[in-house]
Image 1 (cartoon, rainbow, N blue to C red):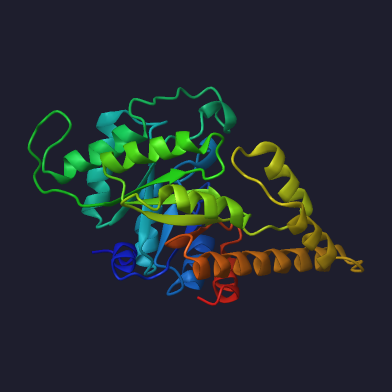
Image 2: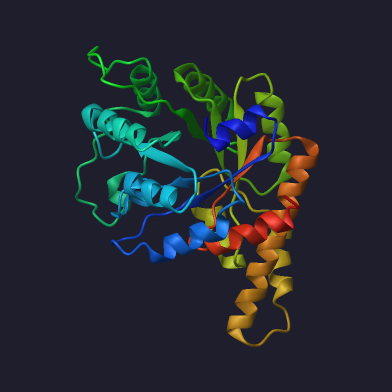
Length: 302
């Protein structure tokens, strides 16, 4: 049993972070960040060509994290592979002993750095989860017997601030029926959203991990409000970021002050989520600043 699954079963407040594979074969920075989060998180997600940008694979990066002593969560999208390749990827992950898998749709290729690439989408999230369950039973999707079977703790994503949220609840129920045991949410910044979401999902047989993105600047917050569906950063948090840098002339120091305030905001929010029992854990998405994950964990008192 993996650390993440064990944490949930023991009633612990689980913590995961997110690591993006490099665009190339130099894994030095990723290995460095892995050592910084070692012992501070139960597992680390590895993105699967996030934002449809070509990088090293999630599978290879998961193997690197294992070498560094980090339990990985392999992300698998339906964008780039048909059901044959998806099943093959899962078997390979099983061979490496990767215990966790997160199923995602995947951003369309038109938003990435290879916009002319052909998207596949043979399987949607439900199909990917079902494929994993079938492989766990000892057969492939065509009914053929496997020589050795993988075992995964399966997860999926959800957007608590989706309008209407009932549509997300309906999808969650279908994902649970397909095998999902835990959900990582889109980034949340206001407590009322999580209170409402917890009330609507408390009857479900699954674990919920609230998505946490540490804010770095007012501009970042405003950009997400305008361009990222399902994200809402309250004005009071934007004002806090502004106030943290007031009177600082040096640009580098100004940015540093806002980053530290963003870490403080994330820590306070995680602490409140935990105290109110609004989730079973948090998924920290530091977006290129994985070295700040331990600081966020410290700020949250974890």
